[in-house]
Length: 135
Image 1 (cartoon, rainbow, N blue to C red):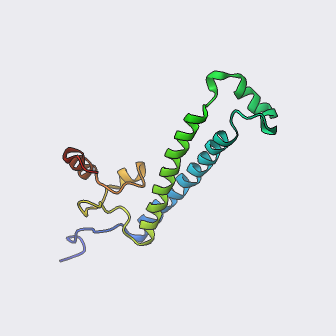
Image 2: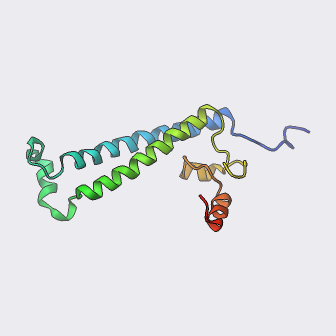
Image 3: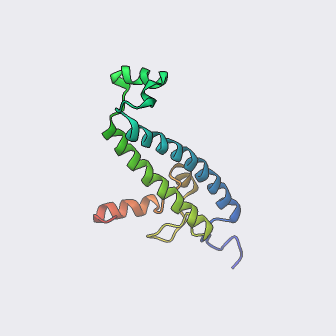
């Protein structure tokens, strides 16, 4: 069997490096957003010194733009889960199992991984699990 006939079972090191760069960029942004949300949860609505900063006053005065502690907390929890999923994806890159569907064993298409870099299922496997009621 020639290389052309061989079915590709994993992404190349160069491809993994490309995904790693995408994930690290997303991870940096996600951590920054998480820290911002945590700040809202920890300090929002209190009368400490941070309330006196001009930018905070502007947001505080405009009730329509103010994020409630509950909303910020829920968003922070989602962001934390996203960060953990991205970190797990980096682990899969390190052990060269990144991009392999955990149900079918097939490669997850690059287009999907670029949009959802922490994906562990092909779209087909995800739909199959949804129909069977499993996740």
